[in-house]
Image 1 (cartoon, rainbow, N blue to C red):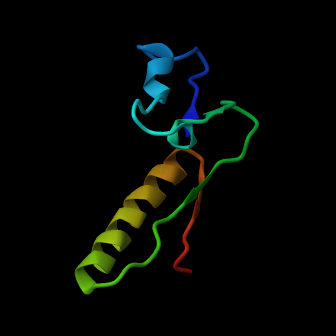
Image 2 (image 1 turned 180 degrees about the vertical axis):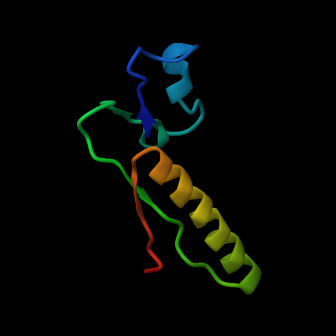
Length: 78
């Protein structure tokens, strides 16, 4: 997903939203910058104690970043 900046596309324009060799289903999707609720869904649990610890750490980083940006973070572990 690509969210457009209110002042227009970033440097390099539309090329930032393509994936070159990937099929279109994996390319960025343009969204309006305002008026659309955004949810950030946390990472799911995975096997292994180390991996679980890493995912929990990343989810806390993502939660803090989402809250700072006014985005709702959905924790799939709750």
